[in-house]
Length: 266
Image 1 (cartoon, rainbow, N blue to C red):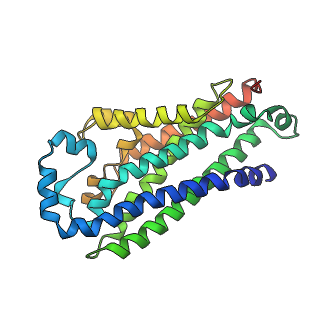
Image 2: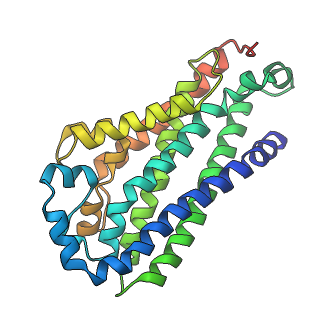
Image 3: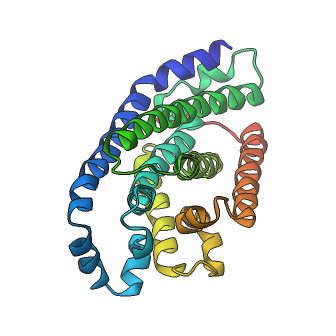
């Protein structure tokens, strides 16, 4: 419990910064919505000039453009991109921070098992992710009600927001398992950015159609927001895939960390 509290305290500042950043990004998009609605027809005509491939990459669907949830779904991929970077940073740094900060020897001589160390760091990072999502959800619901021009489906809005949590959990788990295979990692940011933007590009460029098997390669494409708006559900096969990826990654993190030699960065 002491390790968990220490880890949570160490994440408070960075979590607050990420919450503020995500809220600012959402506020920017919501601020645009009333103006877009006043000139919706011209805005629609502008987007019709884009090719279907470009609209697919940008997540633009003209049938739902003028609804609040449709407009929000078009902006949400950029929010999920930022959230994935936060989660990947948490995953990559959770088990590598002691080596970078030269406190690995101090931690590992304590009378606690390595599994307990992994569990404390895992729970602290999950606390940060849940706090981020709770704050973001509350803020976006407030903003949506503030700028709405007509009532919107709150269930669909919540489902879109929840996809951020699922995406973050996947990227956190993948980041965690990747980190345990590095003996020394001096800086997690380049790796997290490469991982997130690489998978985002895979989803945007290779999986433009909803039935494209390449969607399984990118967690960003596990959630088709137009499908969610139309059906009010998630696609079960992608939820299962995401859960399996996360579970296997976490299990592998425990297994590898318990057996690896830990070195401090000189």
